[in-house]
Image 1 (cartoon, helix red, strand yellow):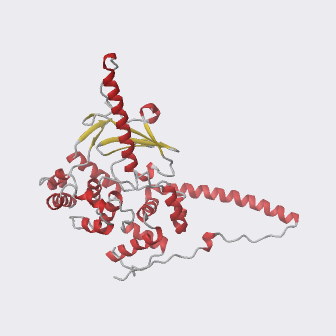
Image 2 (cartoon, rainbow, N blue to C red):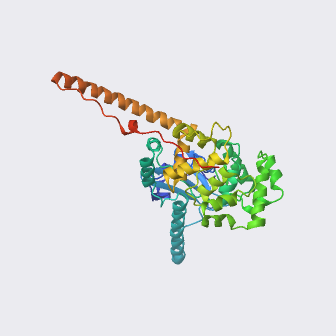
Image 3 (cartoon, rainbow, N blue to C red):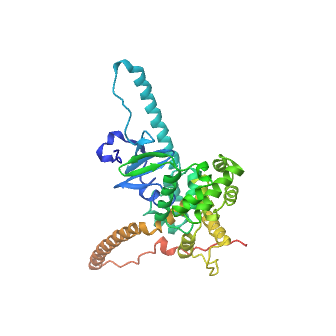
Length: 395
């Protein structure tokens, strides 16, 4: 039985791209709720499916390493017979050229999926200069990058997110793929499937099948949206939304069953190249109130369209054309699963502060002993920082 690849067991079979951790952190990017198909299959090794392939990714400080499993539909990792034969030199040369071609295609797939041409470090500096709170968070949560997912997978995955949490959504999406997706391969005890096609999702028997798998009311939304796309728009419609303006794409998505403003914004940001889209849910609403003193909701108990619009507008004004990317850093930083990073950083800062204060005390005693006058410590820039306020729009 084929097993999940591990870098330490044979680095020679892995391929690589230059990519610093400041530009991409797999542990944060793949587990922050923008995709639901990646699992940590060994320490700091992530295995998942995209573009019809099964991948395992890991990284060192300046390199992204990846392994792509071959022979989809069979046992992953079991390569075809490649024994050398002196009478088949031409075939070997052709095969070598094909392997090189595949490597280039796979490298380009990764660059596109992680949008590696976008310089994240430059964006972090811009956001930090505009937003003191972001700067504090960014020092801990570096390398949180937006994926460029397949629009079909992104849309139907996020229809499953209604009144749900990340771990349950992951299980739901996995069951959806196992029930309706094309089998790719098996690694250890895990079976991997491609994401279902629109045609598979639109089949009339899908709703009941998904209800039996625990999807509840979401089963109807999934089947109806797929059928609506095929009957009204056609197979290429979702991909075509990459070529229209953000608001046009969002409004088009909102015509589908089970797609509200938040889900539409997620799909726009994470698969349709709308970097300015800022998905607003109760989580982001709380961040706005707690960290940015948002008070324009007048004590409103539920998230309204006006609140959604106001918060999105505020963050776009603050962070600029990649506001959705910046929003995802704050969203990631607020997840319970990553609070240990804050605690570890706080502990390090406390120890550093204690050491600094100890050294300062010694220095102060020495200065006083030498007869020097004490000077007041100037206030830091953060202490001088004024509170930020929201601009609200009229309904």
